Image 1 (cartoon, helix red, strand yellow):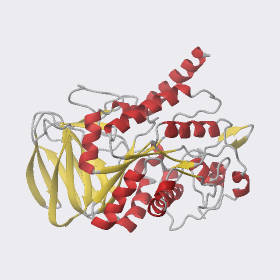
Image 2: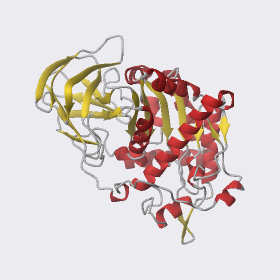
Image 3: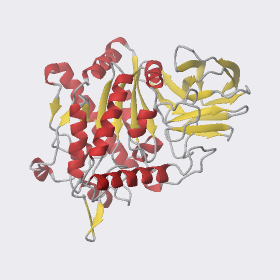
Image 4: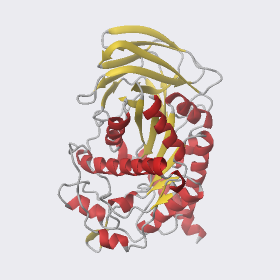
Length: 443
């Protein structure tokens, strides 16, 4: 039994490495076309899975937990009353690549609470052109290290995006605002390491020179760039010879809520342990993170595998590391969605998936963090098949990943969960522990 479990573990880890990083170090990544996830987002997503009665009787469903969300809701209340700002850090895998899910969640949160900007964006992206909310271009003078491949541990620790970018002389990166998402008002560069970095920054046609001087007392530092008027493009070019550490740029202006997309293809969630506590807390401090969302599972669950005890233990350690690095910040775990596998000639939910969801809820409960059962909110067993084959089409033909419309629907589910908890926080704060959520239409 032990050998079998170990074999499964090694198989999954091997698959993770092979699928995600054939090499840990990259230059300029190739463009990857993902037509199933780039569909235009609809104005409404009122698809009805139509299985409410069966879902109410489904013993595999798990209620949602709001444990620890008071910290986030208190900060959110301050945004409303005192016009402060906060960030939501949304961690996930290929399911949220290209700002999927997060772009719709960001819009919904900013519509109510204010905020102007897309939040934190890394220096480069593995899939240029895929993200629609900001356009990026960069040259190959960056050395890129990740969760998986490290350089010198004391200098090249990954940021919470999973990446760290080591500048070479002449390294360039450019961000351009996207149509429909507004122009930039302020850019904040996050950096670290030991070496000072001289950069030339350009907002549209205005050029200035900055020295990024790391704070020896903090693993992460920042410097803000603002302009009297909004600008459509922000470009950095490194002038210094010594390599320096840059993590990315925060595009946020004014009070409100910002949702940051931390997508990392093939991620099981376990590599978050690779982010040093000082780096994690540095990002939290600079960005004013008040909610960390952990959305994993697609790269762990495998039809036919029954024993995930190893993952339960490992993910528990990850959450403890994140909690210790993020005092005073709420943490929300979102379950993996439904998915379908070809079984006996028909696409259907694998038998072990509900138990995997229960395991995710068990982790959240034991570590006293919030939990949202996305599988249940989608409609439970068979919902992914309906998303793929229904009208409108909400997922790709892999019966695993939502398309643009499906990602927007998931965002609305997450937003609804957050706002239901916020209402309970206002009206019945003592009851903010758990809530069964049996209706996939949230009626």
